[in-house]
Amino acid sequence: MGAAMIDPLRTTRRLTDAGLEQRQAEALASVLHDLRGPSCATNADLSLMVSELTASLEKTKVYIIAAQVLVSIALALALKFIH
Image (cartoon, rainbow, N blue to C red; front, top):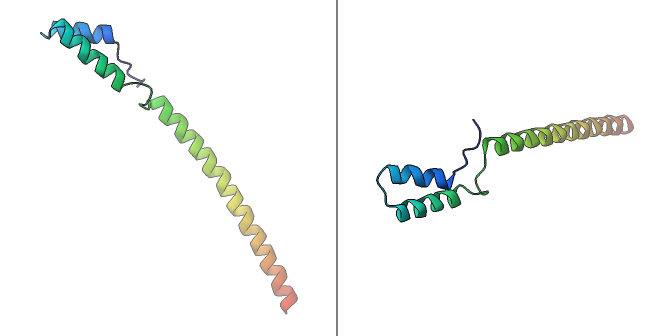
């Protein structure tokens, strides 16, 4: 489902058709349009963020595994020198 952008003209028309006076309908449509501004995340925004976070987690996982391998090697070498 795409982002639902609010068309102030269409919203005003619908509100006046429902019985609101023109000035009230325009004011309400304007407020609704402002509330649905760029600060609202769309499904596309959220999908992109999930993709970016997933990629970041995969990269972090690789670093953690590499660090574990290096620590294991260091411990194995340390044990050889101790005994």
